[in-house]
Length: 132
Image (cartoon, helix red, strand yellow):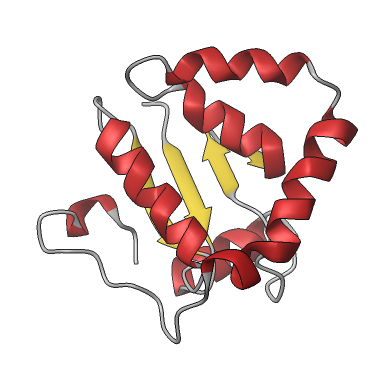
């Protein structure tokens, strides 16, 4: 089975909203989720030799391959229901340009969308889709 694990900043309101957005459009239930701050998230970051202190990117593990920043976001969109897979066409934009936009939003996300004091706990019906 091609496993899709999406790691996200559990304290970020934008990131939590993005996870809810994906959950609502992941019609085939491909994705499982964990916050970057969780034990699962930290172990995964260490496994792929990424920083366990910086939480400024979505991290997608897809079939054992790691994707970050705009590539992760576009690959997630590719697997959602509706017209969202059309966004994957932006993969043709060179990664340095896509990632510059991604990093600009990432740097400002707490100021624009706010920050939680602790990670959000999934509801009981969604708990099975979360790894922590």
